[in-house]
Amino acid sequence: MRPSTIAPVILAALVCIFGCGGGGSNAVTPDPSGQVKGPGRQVAQTAVEGDVLLNGAFIADATVVAYDLSTGLELDRTASDTDGHYILDLPSREVGIWVTSPQGSAGPAWVNVPDKSQTSLQDFTLTGGTAGLLIGRAVDTKHGEPVSGAKVSFGGREVATDGFGFYSFHSVGSTPSGRVMIEAPGFSSADLELRSGQVSRDELLNTAFFTVKPNSDTASSLGGVLRDITNGNPVGGAILTLSRPIDPSFTPIRRQTNLGGVWRFYNIPAGSYSLEIRRDGFLTQTASAVINTRDGVLNLFLDPDPAGRATIQGTVFSFNGTTPLNNCSVVASSGAYGSISATSTSSGSFTLQNVVVDTPYTLIFTPTAALNQTLKLTVSVPASGLLLQISLPEETTGAINGRVTKTGQTTPPVGAVVEAEKVGEPQSGQVFRTAVDANGNFGLNGLPAGRYKVRASYVSPTGPVNLSVTGSTDVIAGQITKRNLTFP
Image 1 (tube, helix red, strand yellow):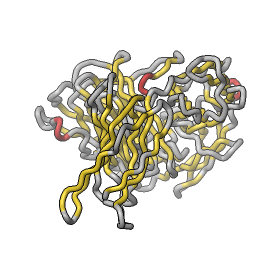
Image 2 (cartoon, rainbow, N blue to C red):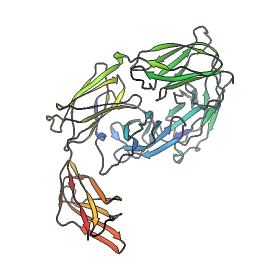
Image 3 (cartoon, helix red, strand yellow):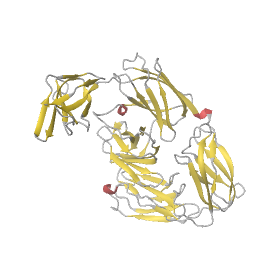
């Protein structure tokens, strides 16, 4: 079967009026943003967070948007803060994330959001250029499934839809216009007219889908799930090539597994086929497939490639560079391959095994020692493995925690506000504040070490009440100072 023109696809016409492309480095580079930023930062129960950078600088006010890869619908959007950091509050599922700002754009990144109280880490490095990011999605009208490998044309350029049916054009200008065309084997062609000024910043990444119609109602499909044979885990991002050696006129078709390892070929005539499966970190394999007049299922397994796996080893030290840190959590996270974790021993050593070679990983070191901060690194592991000597940053802040009560009353003064004012340099006079929770508890975190005046206030049924703690409260770096307050 020769490729024919494709049909109206669910084209998610997403236009971000900003810059383009993402990139990264293979070097082992400490990421200054990896340390906990800002007092009292809270992470969503299930979240994806990270930093937005351009040429090593953190980019504020970049728009970060996440889409459900199964439906193409927007799940959450946020803006990076003044430190270039963002947090997305997402349900546990497979998502695609794009970033755009006046300085550039990046994405997509595919992330399998965990199903428990855990945070996935994903940084974005922007590539500056002409403003504008156009994103779309193609979906099969018969099966409601994304169409991968479709050719999409716009402004004299061509890109292919990925395994989730998405495509991206970077640097299309702040007021893009023209015709978006889409073609795919087995589908009728489709187009979308994009008028100048039709898409604005306020309509950033709002999707209008292309749908493509199969040319034949009698053709069948073949699909399944690809897994790691050693542990049964799904293998995402694998490239599957369907060919027909006995029919030179058949153009090979490529598909990509999603993060759950799911794949499917649509609109395939009955016959015998050969299927090749490739994925970094695994041995390339081939399988034979017979497609008849019904939709078929073929589950596949890949053997890990020992030459494509490596080990990250190292030692974690305290900020002084000499004291080993025991019981420090070390997590290596990759959007496509998931997470690998280890805990440092009494000598500070740790080992992370089965890391995929030449794939970016984010390393998070979380200490239990009070005087050290969390550290984040971005690494790409060579075939020979990676050996790290890590000294965690010194903790320079502390906290004041406690409970607010009222004399002769069992119900806490809900809505009370607790303030801590810094006494003496540096930051003399700076005030940190927080509200008590439903149980009367409060926490002031990220306080620079030093002396503070603590006070509380709230509006009671009989009028405003203010309370100041007599004397002062000392905050010590890496420690929590307990201070309970009682209104008369």
